[in-house]
Every structure is written in C-alpha cells, then in structure tokens.
Length: 283
Image (cartoon, rainbow, N blue to C red; front, side, top):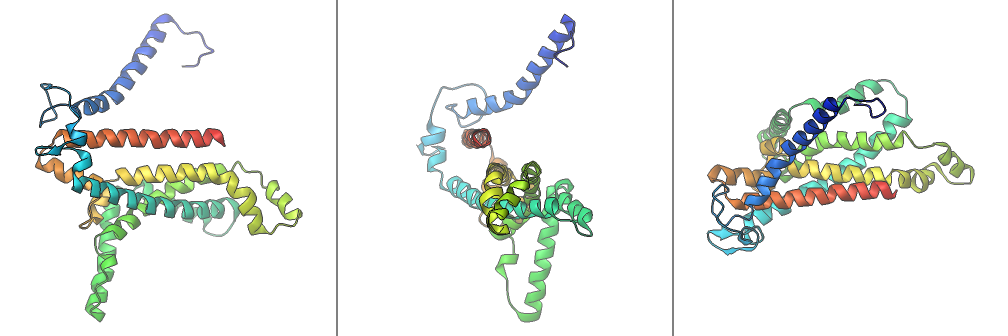
C-alpha cells in the first residue's frame, strides 16, 4: 500500500488485520515456547502446573536447569567457539572479497562471483556431505599411502568450521561489499596525495568506514553459525554444538529444559541484533 494514495476503509482495515495476523503467526510459537520454559512440569505441554525457575537454575533431578546441565553448557561453549572462528574467518575473507570484486577488473570475474554465490543456493546437507566425502577421501588416501591418520580431516570441530565458513563467508562478502560500494574513493586518493601509502590510506580511511559493516557481518555470521544444523550435522564429531545436542535430547523426549535453552537463545539473538542496529546507527 502507498500511503500517499487514498484507500477505502475496507482495504485499510483488511491491511491492518493482515499485518496483525502475520506478526501473531511469527510471534505466537516463540511466546508459547517461552511460557513453557517456566512450567513446573516435566513436559512442555498443558496443563499448566505453576511457575518455576527450576528449568534455568534447578540442581536436583529431574529438574536440572540449564545452568547446571554440563552437557548443554559444554555444547553452548562449543557453539560459541565455532561461531567466533567462523565469523572471524568470514569477515577477513569477506573484506578481501569485497575489495577484489569492487576494485579490480580481471578475466573470469563474473564467473568467480557466481562461484562465490553458489554455496547460498546449495542445500546445507548436500554441502556438508560434499565436504565430508572430500575430506574423508583425502584422509583415507594419506592413510593408505603413508599410514598417517590426519584427524583434522575427520568429522570434528575443524570440519564444522570449514563447512559453515564455506557459505557464511559469502554472506559476509555481500554485507561488506554493499558498504564499500558507497565509499567515496577520492578520500583514499586525498590521503595518498598527503603522503600516505596505499595500504596506509586503506587502513586509516577505508577500513574505519567499513567497520560498521564488518561488525554487522561478524554478528550475522555468528548467528548463522550458532543456529546452523544441516551442514553441522554431517560434519560434527564428538564435540557437538548446541543445535546437535538439542536434537539428540529431542529424540529422547522433549522437556522444558529445551524451552529454557530456546528462550536464552532468543534473548541472546535479539541482544546481538539490537547491538548491530546500534552500531550501524552510531556510525
């Protein structure tokens, strides 16, 4: 709807009802999940048996809370470690890619750009299988030829980082490239006219301009890594991140503990999103 064009009352009411129902559809499952995180029951379902904090702070069976459940805490730590590694790599490579595709002209540029975008349209599970088969083939070949067992090429944290990085780096590239396209290159030229070298001009002029996008790309990459399941599922080893740990728990039977974990994730994700918005507005 275009605000400057007069609308009849029926269309206006219908539009408001549609928007309201749409946001209810988005928020209701999250609200229900949050409510049952405080249900004094061993099952995340009706009837409501009273309010409790035990699924967060409880330390006695069967109500062991999130902050006393060591496997869950260990899984959260693994997810944070993987997310930081993936985000750092994605921002570094994404910044380099942004300069490559925005500043330079070379043969095959369009084809390379297409290859960079390709992981975004490949199903995550296929991406995970491909990386697993490739790395396992190399590891098996090295073992057959030299009897060396390269653990890094077996399912584990390193493969999860590489698998997530393969498509998250593309998203970081797009975020940083969008910012770099709005940069006035004459500012770099002015710095070089004043005696700065090319690298110094980029470091002191361009990178500070890109910093909000780099921070935003880091946060987006971290959230994408933290919630990723499909690719991670195919590459995970003994150190399972949170999404895999929750999936394993769900197979054994859901409890409000998973609701509590989900609520913490919602709060954490919202806080990071608000931080990204604040950084963007400040800059």
